[in-house]
Length: 105
Image 1 (cartoon, rainbow, N blue to C red):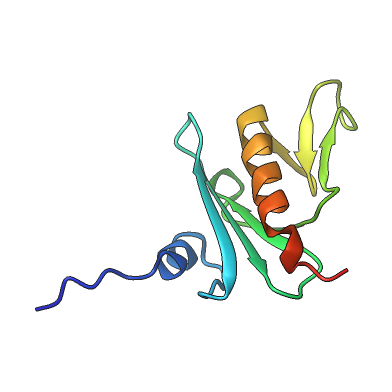
Image 2: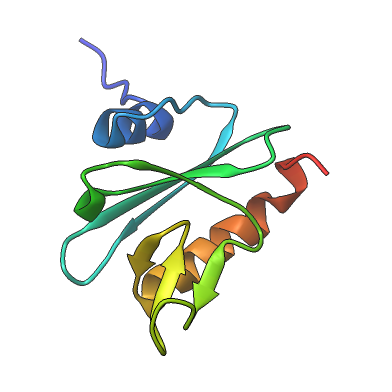
């Protein structure tokens, strides 16, 4: 019997249904409503991938300038058409900053 745990990338890929490997920069967030978000950036890709449980794990492509405030409605935060709250935007901004060196220029 072995105590080997699956890698975080495999766990998150199963959670969101996306393609995530050990070569990706990954992030996970659980908001105050119990909704989960998964972020993955693959080296050399121009955009990262974002999944949100409240959006039925639909894939959203995000990049350095994807987070928008007030374009749809005053104070509303969106990313690639997905409405997110302030804590989610802060987490996503951190993920994008931490993985910036992996994106193509």
